[in-house]
Each structure stands twice: as structure tokens, then as C-alpha cells.
Image (tube, rainbow, N blue to C red):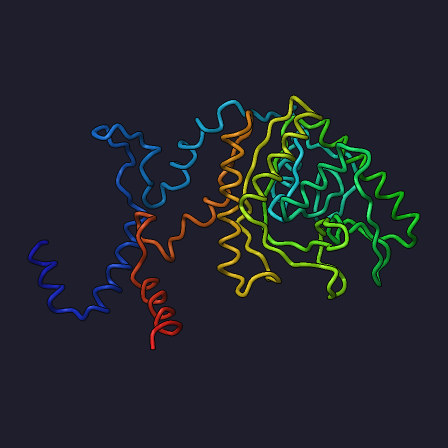
Length: 332
């Protein structure tokens, strides 16, 4: 440590030192050292965590080899399904003039390749795959104050005036869903949440919150083992329907709005994201022509408000907030 640094440290209170260090890190973020590997340890640049504003460029260079073999051109039929973040992929592909598969009219504010609506959980995705690839999957039809509806899909998929109309619409949707999966060359699947409602009578997962609270439904958090098994089954079935299908998985960075199955929503949301991220990783290792795109990491791993310029260590201001929470909750 230089004499000037030692002198400054001896004169300034600890709080002032920490404030100045955080300010220095914020400035340093915009002038990081050149990113490179560590030949001494046989590590490439992609194996070293990027500092400062180089984050996106380094991530791009690092994942490019991992996405080798996946090519999307303007002529490639592309479909997307998943949680609300899947909407961003759909808008992006359509606005840039790509060949986005549209087998069915959907809600205006949430475009998808068929009228699936937002598909938040893997068990709901699995049910969609099952009713799209088999002819004998159950067809539950429910009624609320808004009309008759398909409980396997979320609210934006619509309501009908009569049960017969709802049944006809569901049959037409299932045929369109099958076409969408069969016609696409690349399917982008965004995994969103790991909590949902299970109908005790049927064992089916609802795509929406039930319109009433009673003992008919269980709010459940799905385990890693369940998610992995259901996801692998679903993707394998889609490949049987469409052997040419390439699969691109991503995890939505959007946390859940509320939890009905757990005691606290923030920690439950992050536990779910970890579970889904690991499930996606397992699929890339278990299934051929299955890739992962790091939307979650791009959103959460680059945080200039909480992290120092190395994008790894925590700024003192955030450390103080963490320890204040620790004192307020567990220290007596």
C-alpha cells in the first residue's frame, strides 16, 4: 500500500473510506483492463469472469462456441412458447422480419405461435405438448363469471359464452398447437416459474389461478427432479413429432408476482430460477441439438449498483444493507 493510501486510511473514518471505494469502483467500471485469458493455467478468456462494461461483449464471445450449430436465418421457421419474457422473443422475431410460425390467432398483446397464452411452468408446458401430440388427453372445461374457459391455459387465451363453443375452440386450438410444433424448425422455450395450482380431482396443472379458493386445488412448488423429468419427456415427445426440431432454452429473469405455496416471495422466486436454470442445463447435456441462451444471466449478473467493477465483489453500500437486514432479523 502506498504512503498516500496509508495516510488517507489513517485520517478518514471507515465509513468515508468505504464510500470513496464504492465511488472509485463506479468510475473504474468504465475503464476496465483488457480482458484476456490466463495461459499459465490454460484458461481462455471465456473462462475468466469479465470486468466492468466489457460484460456483454465477453459473454457474447464466450457463448458463441456453445451455440455452435444453432442457426436462425430469415427463412428459418421459428416458434416461441413460455412465460411473459417469451413475448420479447416473439416481438423481436416478428419486427425483424423473421419467419415466425403463427398457426393460430392469439391475444394482441401477447403474440405466440399458437394460442397458448403465457406458459409459466414446466408441468403446464408438458400438458400442452401432450395434448398436441396425443388424441386422448383430457379436455377439462371450466366456468367462471367471465364465461367458459380452458383451465390448462391462462386468462388471455379467452372465454366463451357456452360450453359447446368452448369445446369447439379448444379442439381447434389443439390442432393448431400441433401444427405449430410440427412446422417450426427452432423452438424457443422460456422457463418462467416453478409454482402452480394442481387440481386434486384430475391431477392436472392449471395454467391460471383458480377462480375460487377451496380444497379442490393445491398450490405447489415443483421440485428439481419433477421439472427435469417433465421437461425431458416433453422435449423428447416434440422431437418424435418433429425430428428436425432444434431447441433453444432460456430462463425468464422476471420473478413471480406472488407466492401461494411458500412463505416469502423473493427467496422463493430465486430458488425457482435456480431450479429452472439447472433443469435447462441438464437438457443441454442430455438431449442433442438443445442449447441454452443466457437471458437470466444478462439481466442479473451485471449489476453496477450492487457490484464492484469486477462484477463479482459486492460494494460496501450493499454490504451494509445486507448486514442491516441480518441485524434486524436474527441478531438479538
